[in-house]
Length: 291
Picture 1 (cartoon, helix red, strand yellow):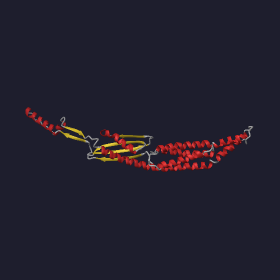
Picture 2 (picture 1 turned 90 degrees about the horizontal axis):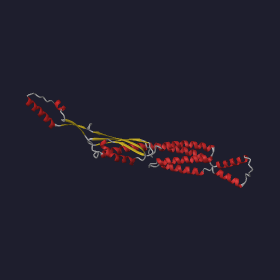
Picture 3 (picture 1 turned 180 degrees about the vertical axis):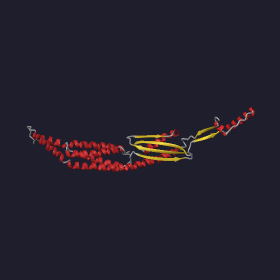
Picture 4 (picture 1 turned 135 degrees about the vertical axis):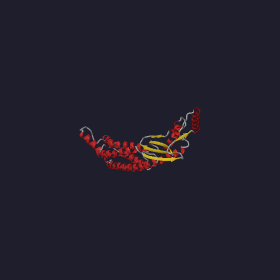
């Protein structure tokens, strides 16, 4: 079982460039992948998202890709030597023709238009495709490893709370057989106290009392709870994404517990239902972080 929260980092390099990737995962009902890439790698965004989507089934995954030149800078100073010679020749010609001594220094050349320019090193997306995917794969591996570790803690907590719920259900199961008879006696007593002109030993009245009492029987709900528990434990042992089915089972647990409480109409059972639903609410909160 894997959680949705985690962090991963990866990097890869070529002779000129280093690619660094950072990924973070947080809770979300559906899968949402958002990754920020440098403009030169923008065309690889779709492939990067698919790689993440193949590894993560649920949650929001945010990613950041950083590209840096391994030389420390991605800019180069370009000197136009041919143009410099033309400046020097022009200065010499002007001096000879005018008779005025013209001194041309290196500082003058630095100020000459077009003689020096800075050229940016442009990264090629296709050349960096493999390094990007390699760094991304490393980041995904770290992210999923952290999610697996967190998932183990979640599994232990969910099992513990599930055991707590079933401890309450076990007490309800012990109480349950007495509930229909208690309802039967209670109804019979109320009919006697009502002072109605009825023969309480009449088969039809006894049958109706019996039907009313049997409606408080919770055997079916307890059986379904047992089935849900088996399924829940099975999902907890699975390595597949189980967040959605676990969330569904929590709803079914809640439905059965509510039905038991309303049908039994017993103070002792009601208290056990409250205790069980308190644990169930904590389980539902934890399940929101399961992929």
